[in-house]
Image (tube, rainbow, N blue to C red; front, side, top):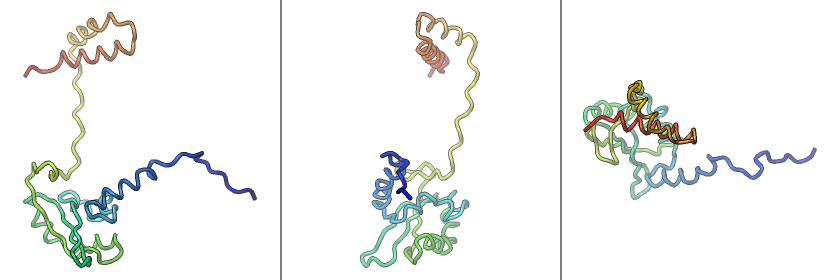
Length: 169
């Protein structure tokens, strides 16, 4: 039986190219196990993931038992405090041993600081665009009419509609 030939023909998967960089970025914040970040909703549960997220894993001087720091809003902190032991057990199940010995909770305002904003929910999608005003659409069409290239004309027409429909501040 002849040896199997490679089907990638010298190309590598993008996940293989990024894996090392993701690991280094995770480890810089103490996350030796990046699954804790990428699969937080599955590990902690959807209800906890909606109110908190992992920020840092800090290791003590002896190297035994790490501290997981969670970010939450002030109103959710007491609820999270009651779930700390259950959460610690679930996180340690990911590591496969008792890696996390403590969980600390950091609170922030709903607006938060730049690095610690507390928007835990998925942001709603952008609102549907309104139908263009026919008068503005016609004006945009007349502005872009002298252009002979159809692709450029369509782009200029869309730009003109955006500029003309912009609200006055």
